[in-house]
Image (cartoon, rainbow, N blue to C red; front, side, top):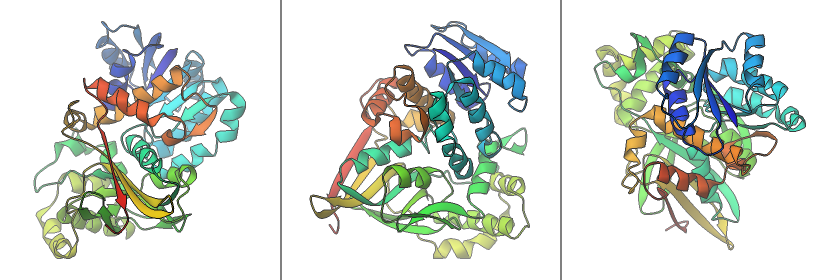
Length: 400
């Protein structure tokens, strides 16, 4: 297949291309970005790749150029954000040109919009997979593995770890002195209202709500809700009759600081961008004012850093299942999550491989757990790092 890598001059797209260039079935890759010089520079990094890698200037706001680029490809990897601005635009164009589509969308609002294009994608014979990164992506597939151990699902939670901002500047949240798109996204999804599932129904609620968890293996702690697509898609795929949410595994200090920023955003005192700057460069005044909240906030206890947990019934009994990634696995997965660009880009490419060989090539717009073969995905992820599948599944009857 001929692959168009939109936005691949960025770190996440480039990480996806690095893996994609090694996969069978990939014949040619075009790195497309609105910055043509950056696209060309990224393409030169892959001069020795197994497949030809070229570059092209594409601004996704230019409909004609976007459609021309898509029409020359069999499949597009879309890493152009923010998805609440560009997700539906690119997917609609891909459907029009008959181009299979994968992205790493981690905004819940455009996820709903893009799932609404399912009929159009089916009619066009296009397979589109939205949210094929780390969270969402890996998180959804962990939930699918856990749910496969049950007859019926009651609650479903996915969770990811949050790096703690210190009193100094956090360079990972800044580019050229400005907050990164990821930092702005974090503020957007930590304020206003977010999507969650309560009693089996999709609802809107404020973020940063505590969820106390008791998990197999004697694990117990509190994590906090944040706006991500997982509750929306897991409600459709796993059909929980209870609650579902995406959670942050976060220290009380960081949660209290985030909650202060949330309140200021909701009150109109800060924009998402200004709050992201405050997160990257925490002020001593804000840190001091957040201390009382931090002292009242429950912490993560011994929860694993990245996991999915599902409760329900098996053989007539209440049961709990935990699926998590083993940071000590022989494949050295700790190296993956030390670099979020690779943690997001590599899963995107591995998901693409299942579309290329037909395993996941089902027309329509899908979340990862609906079409990606989870055991194969995690086996491929382990092999990417020279080891076996890094997934650990633990389970026990509820109440133990």
